Each structure stands twice: as C-alpha cells, then as structure tokens.
Amino acid sequence: MVSDIKETEALRAAPKAVAPALPVPRRRASAWARFRRHRLAVLGAFLLLLLVALTLFAPAVFHLNPTAVDLRSYEKPPGAGHWLGTDAAGRDVFSRLVYGGRVSLSVGIVAVGFYIVVGVLLGTISGYYGGRLDSLVMRLADVFMAFPRLIIIITLAALVSPSIYNVMLIIGLLGWPPTARIVRGQLLSLRERDFVLAARVLGAGDWRIMSRHLMPNVVAPVIVAATFGTAEAILLEAALSFLGLGVRPPMASWGNMLNAAESITILQSMPWLWLPPGLMIAVTVLSLNFLGDGLRDALDPRHTA
Image (cartoon, rainbow, N blue to C red; front, side, top):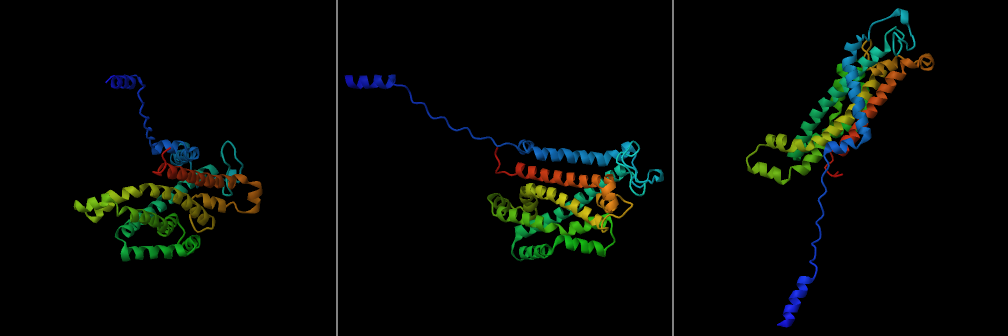
C-alpha cells in the first residue's frame, strides 16, 4: 500500500510529456503572389501595358497621321519636328511606328483569339467523346502540323490578296492544332473524375458538363498558350509584311517598315528607319514570352511557394 502511494506521488512529481507540435500546413501562395515574384513577367506586363496605351492614346494626344507626306522633310534624321525622323516619302516614322503597333497587336489578338476558340471547341469535343470523333479530329490536326507552318502561310498569303484581314484569317485557320491537343489532353484525364460522374448522375447533359465543369479546368494552359501564340502571330505578320505578302503600304506595320528599309544605303546611314520597328518587334515578343513564362508558373497548381 505504501509502495503504491509512493509510486503515485512520483508520477505526479515527474514532468509531464509535451505532445509534439504538429507541423503547420504550408499555405498555398495565390497565383497573383507567384506572378509578382516573377520579375521578368512583371516587366513584360508593364511594357505591354505601356505599348497598348501608346498605340491607343498617342494618335489622339499627338494628332498623328501615318500617311501624311512632308516633302520638305525628306529622309530627315530625328529632330524637334519629327521625333524619330522621316522616311523616303517624307512620312513621320513615329506616327507609322505607333500605327504599326496597332496593326501588329490587332493581328496577334484577333488571329490568336480565333484559333483559340476553334482549338478549345475541337479539343473539348475530341477529349470528351473520344472514339472515332477523337481520332478524326486528331488526324486532322496531324495533317495541319505535318507541313512547315511558315511555308504554308507564305503560300496561302501569296495566293490571296495581301491585306491585314487575310493575314488574320490565315494565321487563325492554321494555328488551332496545338491548342486542341492541349485541351484534349486535359479532358482525357478530367472526364473520368468523380465530379464528372456526379454531374452525370444528377442528370447534367454533355454540353453542361463540358461548359460548366470541364472547360474551366483548362483555362490556365489555354491562357499560357494564347500568350505565346500572340508573340508568334506578331512575328508571322512582321515576316509576311516584310516579304510584301502581309499589310500593304500605305498602311503602316512594323514588317513593311522594315521592308522599306532593306537597302544597304538605308541600313548604313539611316538607322532611324529600321531600328525603331526592329526594336518594337523584339521588345513586344520578349515581353509576351516573359509574360507567358510568368503565367505558366503562377497558374501551375503544383507551385505552392
């Protein structure tokens, strides 16, 4: 009895064991927080916003006219009257540069928007239904991707009348296969998930399942693909205009500005005619690529930091 009392007192006097602290779950950083940490992506977004503001508001603020000819200022270097000089026809280079930005951004946005819609629709139908329909869509995509894209675009542009609308249409018609493959790959894994089965049990139709439950899950990769696709479309438009198969003068574009400055004399002694459009193409494409890299990292659900 005495030993039991002593044992009880000893247990009470002993220090109580402290339960090990549970690890604090790591909080998932938001997509915006991850994007802000990507400095090049933030820089690219800032430069793109600056470019869009310049192309939208500069013509109204500075009263720019890209086709106005000033014969007294023939091939003049940058100065007070013409910030970036004038070209061989006496037109203001800055005005043409701003309006050329409108053309390049319009081609990129419209063409990519067109083939993103087509690619998402075909990829969703292909990935959801599968079977023969999936095989038909993917074989059609293989046919489009089997030929060098630039060669096909140049051939089609040479067959039709060169214009900004034809450039948009050609790029839009030939650019959908990669997007369709991305969406199809996502839906092949999503269509067997429990939330899709639950939607079917509750009586949801195919279109409702695709539009309300599946398509929102492919928004992130599609946004990233659209960003990189816009950069590619701007380069394609510049290449076609440089070759004389895209936007035709007197309408200004960065590509036909480079085309007008291809002589050795201009390249050597008049850099203000080719350097600004070349730099604008490079800065715009790099900014879009940086933005795409940042969006890809920010929208990736596997990133928790």
